Amino acid sequence: MSRTALAAATALGVVAWAGRATAQLHADVDLEAGAMERLLSSRPAGRNDPSPGPMFELSGHVAVVPLLRAGAYVSFDLSPVGGEDTREILSAGFSGRLYSPWPRGNWRAWFSLGFGYAASHAPAYASATASSGGFFEVPVGVGASLRLARSFELIGDLGTRIGFGFSGSMYNQSPSPPAGNDSFGAFLVVGAAYEL
Image 1 (tube, rainbow, N blue to C red):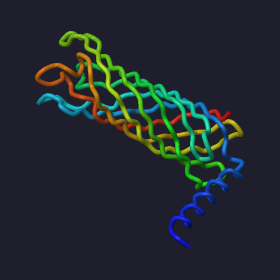
Image 2 (image 1 turned 90 degrees about the vertical axis):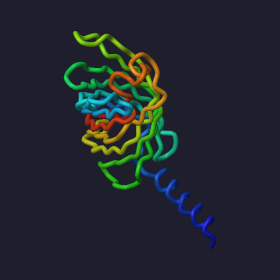
Image 3 (image 1 turned 180 degrees about the vertical axis):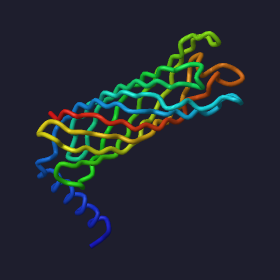
Image 4 (image 1 turned 120 degrees about the vertical axis):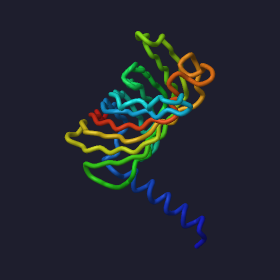
């Protein structure tokens, strides 16, 4: 048997097995809270990375095929920079989840990947003027859930957001941005999911 035939048979077996699984649901709505720490590139000398700040996320996904869901997210996080200002970042975009066929039962695990846009704003303070900007982001992460009831799950996500394509006064000031570019962010959130 050739490798191609063996790979095709294995893939069909996994899809057929997952199609029979009664735990595969059709949609979910998630509400999570946690912390995000953004790491800045191109930051001026003497400026530190922001401290971790609170993060909130609302997302929803619909099953496309067994073990694969597509959906959207919106999130908000505060990013305190050196005690002098706190940046507010609102993100929204599309996301997908690829579920693992293991573990089974009340536990589930997934890999997530998305693409979105983040709008950032830093209000005026005594020593700084207001600035705003935006950038594209690619959220990447892993998650898990524990089913507590037929339609209710506890969930958690650990991941990163990769930023690029920066624009606006927050990011495009010469010779370097006031705080730096939000090129990387790490987050950990926990919350609840309602399964439809």
